[in-house]
Length: 432
Ligand code: AMP
Image (cartoon, rainbow, N blue to C red):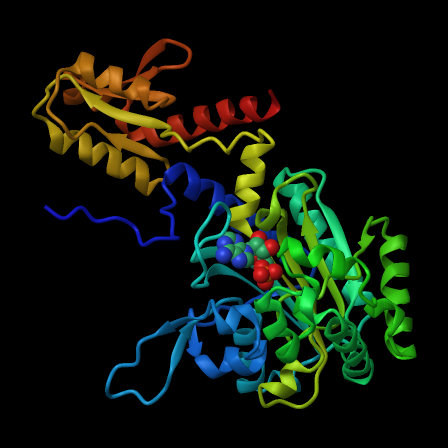
């Protein structure tokens, strides 16, 4: 008999995980709203060219990790699952003429991303990202605002100690001269470079800088630094981003090797990481400015900046640092009854409670009252509504399972009574 499993590199979010993710998604949405971002939702797949052109053909994300969808015979298009949200959002910006909206257009989205990578701890083929994009503002103030927003997200999620790595990767004016200097530097060391890096050297030399290959540690340590080769405009921009971050008291470390994996970045590049975590899992999120991307995807030249924060790695980090997951919701009331067969009565009473906005479970099995009450206690319900002979007089027993008290009340008052007592109880819990 075949046993089916979730695809390699994916993970099911079971209820405890899903509740945690939902909480983070809500926090992300609330926080982005507080900062003036509006929600957007783009498809989970796009024309592959959106990513090939936007992200760059010679990047790991496109070359090795793009999750391509096998074309159906009647389709001439080639599709791919989105490896990151920015290219799709910028495609939407151009398609819907958002260039005519008041600028900047600030957009946020949280959802699953897909990369056909070799799965390992903290690296999945489907993972979630909280993303913000501010399109149409050249910065530098908005750069600092975004970096600060991400840092606050981690704190409000309960993760302390997240650090910001910051760099400038220059722009079209100064990057090519820097890349030429860098290429020259690596060519002189060619014999020392691992074969994959030699190959990359000719195609995308910047990528050598953030190579994970240990053999690259020494050459990279002495490599020319982009921050020493910025043109005046980029150097000024970088200085102003730092001044704004300083003014907001957001700590950061300058990391000249931080070039990020995607081609479209210009000027500001940043990453959030937790010191002490291993390799791949260390980067919790990252982002940067992409002043050329709108044009690459067919729009007028328009600056933009954004970040993608991985929720899966954040949850792993929260677990590692011992942050307790949020409690699962419990029903306010469980409807039980003396007559095991009277499922219609129990279901009807629970339905009325639910219609009144109360989380209620009905005992739909046909077990004895004692067993029903045991299950209600296991549910950690606040109340058991006990249906019995008193129903003939329009009354039910309301047992407070927390206080151990019980009283007879009219069925007509049940919803109000449960709502009032449960709200008072929760209020007490919040205070405690
Ligand atoms: P990147 O655009 O590669 O810098 O990704 C931004 C963030 O998304 C990373 O810092 C991770 O938190 C998360 N992320 C990227 N790729 C993966 C993956 N394969 N599995 C889990 N999380 C990922």
